[in-house]
Image 1 (cartoon, helix red, strand yellow):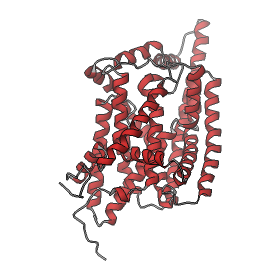
Image 2 (cartoon, rainbow, N blue to C red):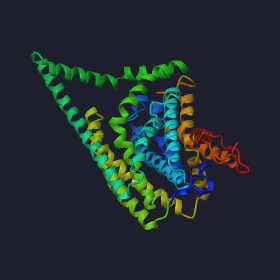
Image 3 (cartoon, rainbow, N blue to C red):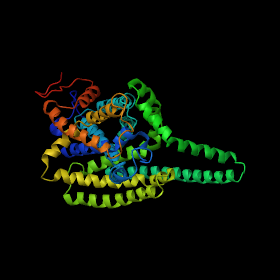
Image 4 (tube, rainbow, N blue to C red):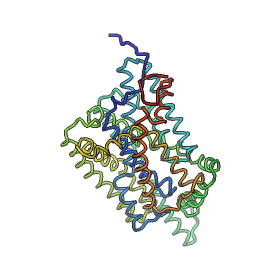
Length: 438
């Protein structure tokens, strides 16, 4: 039967939204800030607390807890939710009879996300920008949308395997480098001449050590403490390198894999809270049991080696699997929370944060740009790791208050509204009132 094209394509109505997804999106967005704050406030010390921010006492415990439960996992869930959002967006357009027009709107939406990402990284001074990567992976997601859930899961697992293999070879290469540097040191001590290979190994090692040095950290902090245009110019080469290397080195295994896994879970009904509580508890049990075991092994590997460069490479071998299982546990726990008959006020607040995810995500960068860079107070490198949590909680409270108030008067967050207008190439009503298209 021929499908009738609906020329009046419109964004999804608030009544059609899936509450559990909005709550989950709000929780994950807050979790993203919990990890990103280290990049905003400590620069090069995101992973390694010995560089700056403190590596003892409360600072060490903060690093340990975030690495066990949140590092990588929040980004995994954010990727999962973006994949689900892309799928729902396209699926609903198709069901409305959009035909090939659905692809037009979808790819226009993804293209604008890519542009937002570039603006976010270069102009809002956030080196850990992810929207650009999501857009690139979003172009690929389109080809997977009609696959059966089992095939999506298999595809995601295969991507994990490729990423794991690549990480293993990185570790093997680093291990060889350390061995060569030790050999070169012994030969130098005994007065022997070094081969070209050993000299190259020494130079490569010195470059790695230099990147973790107090001088390099001080230089980065100083660059970020410049005025706005000075900071933009300083950060631009870092953003260029980040956007050039990450798409093929990490994003396919890190981002696309979780997008595919998320679409599979959505098709199975796990993300809409449709499954019985027993199945979600099983996710919690298996996810945390396996995930925490892997993450604890990684953490101990790093701690026992006193945060050596090689230990981070070794811990990365199982990185994708630890965060994957922790993510499963988090999903189960969030769905149990969504189904529970209490804390409705908190669910509603988190759902409002989730409905304005793009606005709130970019707001994190604006607030942190003012706090940490030379645009405002220039506090990068000035706070200890645990003290950054105060900033995180403050932003959480602010957005939990602001988001419901905003949505009381408006249909969308400001960035969501702009994104929809650009995607559909028409201006939609922002203020609440009789449904209309301006």
